[in-house]
Image (cartoon, rainbow over all chains, first blue to last red):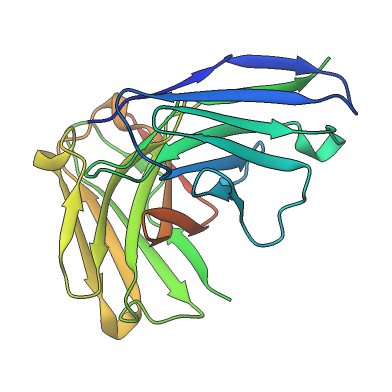
Length: 108
Length: 117
């Protein structure tokens, strides 16, 4: 099983600032890495797939990068609606598909 | 647009069986996708449980495989989850989702299942 590790657990950011979230895989997942956003009481929403491709309707302020074992999600200028928990998921090797433990982006 | 809706008992007794159904609308479950279950214990992260293909093929998380069964009913356009011998550790919000190439593209709203006597 591929273990996904996200850091930090919590990120405190002011609106308008940049947020950088990290995800590390225990072995290479190539570019088969996705990012999801989850707001309280809601299901996760797909943001990024293929490590860097935005899903339909996702604003350009969200960007992803990386390959192999190291990945980054960047939110260039945080809006109020971006404060949420973000999960990475590897879909290179299954079963099982595996998620990181999440990074909570909170208002500073 | 595809929509998924979970349903089932919100309370299950320890050692009992958790049973949930996911009703799919907007697309046929026979149309070539994988259909997945994911759970999230309160305040914790996401855990993939397993998935089923329209042909009936299944994959399960090895950590749960001995207790989990996923099945599909094409006539009702829905798929189901059963988890046997539940304990408090199975208390979670359970989501169903459509999987495209490993990506969980579309999700249900989730349903909370509590294991308690």
